[in-house]
Length: 275
Length: 180
Image (cartoon, rainbow over all chains, first blue to last red; front, side, top):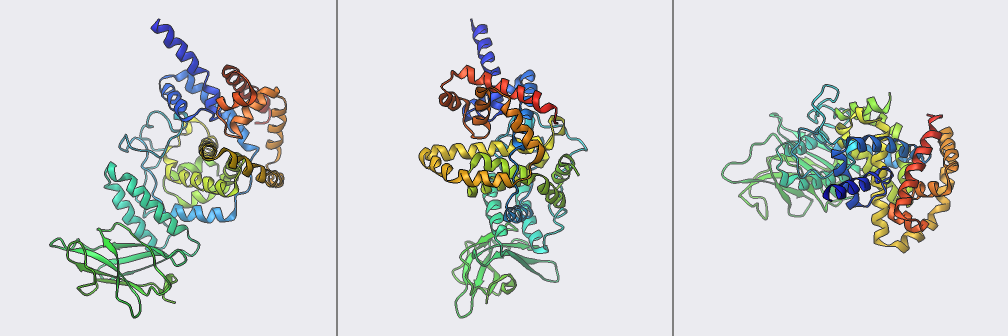
């Protein structure tokens, strides 16, 4: 009885191969069918063949993509870290690749030489400016040491950064002292936003913090937030009067106004502000 | 270079390879997304997500499981269908009106595209399916309907629609095979 029901149920699942290949299952059925695919080699083969057929339908729809799309995608690529190669990532909360097993693979592929490992992001950043490299390196440092709980927050931050970079007027600048410590910024004047990264500085002793300030002519400095290590900080609400950025060491929790001399400063004129 | 080789380079973080890959696949990806999503602004949005996802997830491509182009277009189709369904869920009526408004522009634009022989051949082969096979396949693939919705629209039992979809795809394979 149970065996018969199981058989009927499996028969029913088999019949979903074509609808699945056409992406015409609803979300719940899709999940159930993919679970079944994990265990049914025959179905996986069939789905693969039917999916190849379905893809042929895609070819008749090709159309030139808008030129602006290219710029946006390439800018976002420069700012977006790649996912670790499957098999080396923590299982569980990974949410992005909701793709069919026949596409992603139900098992993580074994480590092989064919797929180069993800290199540190500084290597491929040949076209980005040094400042962009600093920002992204900071981002990646955070991701490498991330906990699962922080994954979504990091993703959201990566998206925000990608947005700043995708702005048509996004520009980068940085400054460094003799010891290689510095501050880097990627900013969009039209969006009034900037991604700011501090690099090379040790955490201040005694629970003190690095605080970022916006300097404008004839106005008191405005706090843009606290910088945690080399994690990028996204500053918003910058207007044309923004002259420069400054970093000071402040008591834990930060101060209303700077209480010490800046350890790092950066003019914003070259990125479209202070006009 | 072929998309397959490029995708492997992209998985290694090669941005130049990604630019080349973009040149190869942005047209098919954008065209497919627009065919399903219809709305131009939303199509651009979805295409951008898909192309960025290629960069992020290139390491997951496994050549043993099929060609890079299949992998990429499967991804694009999945994302486009997800979008058009959530739009439909949000407002069936608005969607219908938007579609009516955009349809003429869409046809006009596709006519300008030089998709060439392959496109003609797909159309030719679609024409050779039975009407029910063709409608089942195209309502699902090009319009993003679930097979339950397709069954409703065509007033057919679910089992019949599933069979028509399979027969339609199989027959398409036989016909297209000659041009592959």
